[in-house]
Image 1 (cartoon, rainbow, N blue to C red):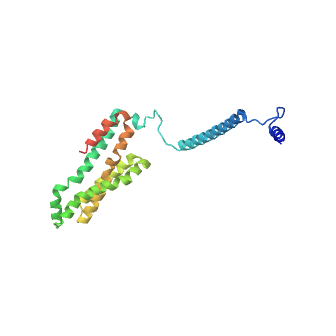
Image 2 (spheres, rainbow, N blue to C red):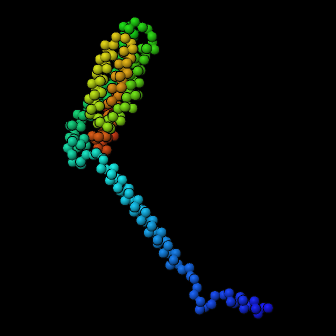
Length: 217
């Protein structure tokens, strides 16, 4: 019995002359190489797709030439000082308008035959409300249509609204014109720093921005 079991166990062992299946490292390495090749291929395809998307985006990008004389960064020093000086003057003027009416509020209420102190304070503060609402509209418009048209339009409107406030027949009209004047007057405060970024090199913007900010204080 033991002799038969020994023969059966030997018969189950692989013979030396029989071909054996080998799990060689070459098969594993070839599969790794195939995976790496597919990964590189996918990476190249994704890179080419990103490049095509950037080219499509850049084709619609409007920018200045490096040596374009009309580019604000290439302006002369005198032209930069003139333009930024005018913007700084407007920035100084428009906040001044918000508070210069405060000393004569009593006379205004007397002319309109009222003694309501709430209306008197509202005549001053409603201008600041226009300062808060104006940037919500002016900032996007400056990026769409440029800053110069906004400066011209809002300076003209600022003059007209203040003239209307001076000639107001009643308190309601005065408050409405004061609000509109605040909206137009917020233009140089809102996009003035953008004009500095367009005109002055990055290394010099800190000093110019400081001078611009101090012009209204």
